[in-house]
Image (cartoon, helix red, strand yellow):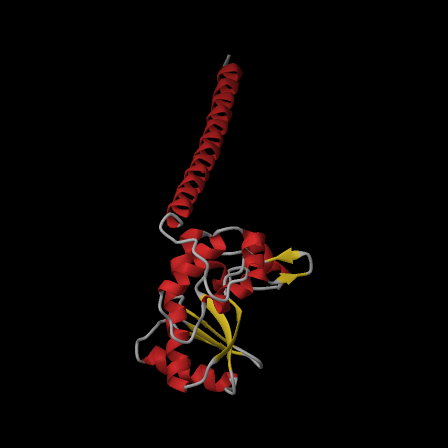
Length: 209
């Protein structure tokens, strides 16, 4: 008699645990589904207001390859009215490949993320009175980031980081200018000095390497 009651309690406990696991799984799935719907909605809404007019420097082959979002993103960049940074410079890294893996445009809801760092680069060029030579890496899709062996939490995947070069200016000097602007409160982020380029991001906290 006592064994039967004990077994019922154990079965009841197991059923309760299974029910808890099922609830957690359902809530996790529901949360992920709701998040994907929200991101999808935000991504769609973000592109509604951008023009698909041709932009100087953007080749038709890019549009043929990735669609009208190329022109929408280019028109967004053009609308920032940067003096030293062109839409072509910004979009070019999104057509790079590593092996069989190609990069992509950032999702639409991330487009505005790039504005603060582009304005920093524009100001750096004006301060140094030197043209931008190349924007080597900007947004990286997760797959492309893995292909180039980027950090698993790279700020490039958030569209808030740029690897750059300026004509006739060493990476060390570029980094020094970036640190000066950061100390003036122009931006708050990371600055990395490499042998052939400088990394700058707007992560929201100071970092140097």
